[in-house]
Image (tube, rainbow, N blue to C red; front, side):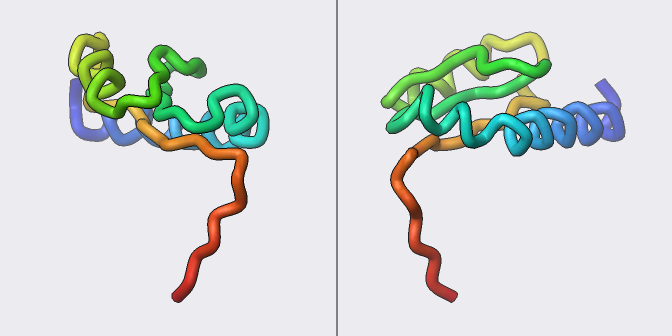
Length: 77
């Protein structure tokens, strides 16, 4: 897969995650998720297990991994 294609697919995956974030944080609260092709294909409380699933995915370089929590997160700058 070309670099441009990887970037485009990764961007689509990030956008899908952003578009569905509120629902996903409720459904996968306290878990790591791996997103690609408009779906969550792996989720677990253990990041290593999600990473293992990503390495077996058909295009691991395009996958977006995110920790989901329904709890508000304070950010200080």
